[in-house]
Length: 134
Image 1 (cartoon, rainbow, N blue to C red):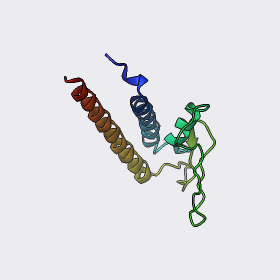
Image 2: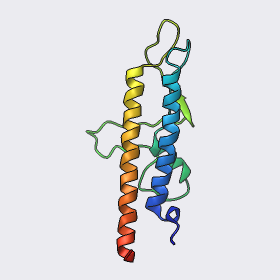
Image 3: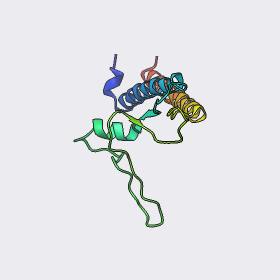
Image 4: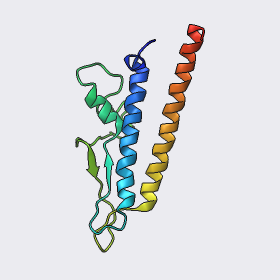
């Protein structure tokens, strides 16, 4: 049997699923501490930055910094921090910076991304099985 993590697409899907799981954990901490005085909302750095960092030394189609391809486009930026990063936003009188609306929106998007990656993964497994006649 072929080890799926040795195939580029499957390795990418595996990394993305790991990142999505870690992000759900960070977002869950934010929601769990929504009433904790002084709690600062956190999030992981974007997956594209994690991927670029993990693949350093190898050629990627994904650039580590967004590229402005047209002078009419806005220049992009990425955070240079590692791991979870604190986000600055509005603050409650007790110093808590968690916005449940924003956290729940991020959780829903992360869940949707997880479903999408899983569906693509299963589709490619099905194509390999079909090609192998199984």
